[in-house]
Image (cartoon, rainbow over all chains, first blue to last red):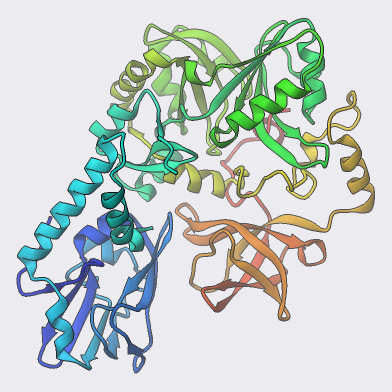
Length: 156
Length: 374
């Protein structure tokens, strides 16, 4: 699994590429894999404001709809026009052609809460381990289950 | 409260094959192996193998078996000859659907009923409580593994593994035969809208049957398929799914299943309500929907016309075959005509949606009556 260098990552599995005062946002390879075949993407409009930790759009797989949470606050400068007609681009190239929106950051301090590639790789490894534990163990550890439920919210 | 989830005899095989496992009706089931769309297309073009061992099996046997089956189901079981199968409904006394089932005539005085996983306990109690006379009712759900081999290449995949002459096994017929040296009940039935077979074997033989079928079929394009594609396949064919299109408060007339309710047969539970509803007309009907603008309608979304709620979506997806967003839903009878355009509300946004004939997909060259059984 790929974790490109130089990107910032959120716990909700979005990535952020910061260039000056603007940030490009997409979902990670792990997120697209968990979602499965993406068949529809709902994005905000240019000029709309997005708020850190609030949903700014949604992706639908054949199975379910999932909210996408804003990793930062800002104003939408650009949306990826390719996605409405070719949502599977997110599956094919989540870090490249499958980018979702570009925003003007309203507060650069938002970036402090995000992870770098190493931290995110470790975070994903943990999530996978928890998933495996969950699948292997007959008995449920309440704390772990609760933690996982929280983390998995967007995948449902 | 935490309930332990159940696993089919194939659980380990699924994990080994890299399946993503999800909870479904109290079971840990594979939702996909390589991807829902890829698996869906494999079934439409070649063949797919499904583990459906979570489905339940209840046997009714004894001198009064036919009489009992007639009383608890809406379709005419007297028409099901030995080694034939039939789509049928258990109705409650309000005419609502307790479950939709396939009933197999396995012995002169025995019927084997395949029921939905989510309804096994409910059905077993219902059947025991309502099957009168000289019958025994047996919940055999844990005894069997059930595999569904579906797709145009199914017969070619299965034939080398069995002496049974598959070309002679007609739709909604079955036979007892060895497949890969494993004793099976081989039925020409399915839930995908393609030709195919459902194989019942002893639970302990399930994994070997699964592995042998996959090895034999792989060169011909056979792949394992999860519940994700099972759902998109049945939805294209507009087959109802219990808990979505059918439940205890939905009648067969509303669900478009009038063909299953045979009013001329001996009295059955729920009949009076059906007779009355047929005379009075139904207030709502199950319809097919096609979205006219981008979006996906999901179960529970409201259907709206002129600022009035006129119905509710029961299932929806993007059809991999038609490449359109499709859905099933209940709509008030006055708005249920084909070509009528209503709105579906998707997270606060209104999307125009046209009522279209169902099924959305029908494989070529098959007469309608053969597909539905009797």
